[in-house]
Length: 203
Image 1 (cartoon, one colour):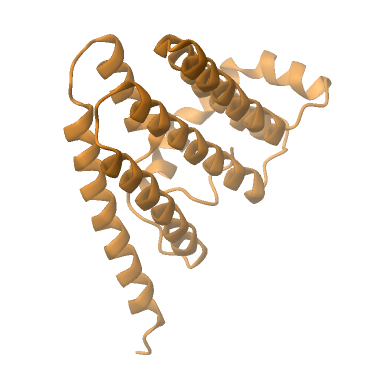
Image 2 (cartoon, rainbow, N blue to C red):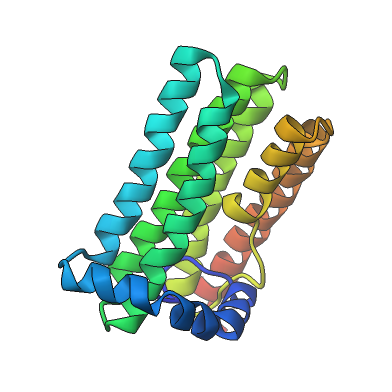
């Protein structure tokens, strides 16, 4: 949605570079949604529901393909809600926060999917989910205080791609990639807390 809430400074630069083109391409779609009275937050929630339903189908029928298709649909929907907000001046800080929460919730779904369909240790998946949640919370506080991260690992940019490569291409890189992501997130979490502590110290 709008570039507020929980985004790194690097993400903001990236957003400004491609958002205008994406918004132009999706203008006919967002016009229809706006005409129907559909709000950006509703689109974000729809993306979560699609991922959740397809995850359930994958579990019930023991078929990974359902969730993988649902994940693709979520990524597409996740791109529509922001364009809807910007094209029709419906953007809010709370909407941006919902967008980030949606990304986190679907990332947890993806980790749950990995736990069911791969032999990756549960401790690693649980740690990644917990640390990522804490990192998002610290990022939000840092942004509120005007000291955003320069970059942050994102589920849709890292975990989703690795999941597709692992399941469909059969390239077993998911475990080492998740371990690397965990170490990076821990480092960002520690440096983020230190930055907040230093900001509170009197000169």
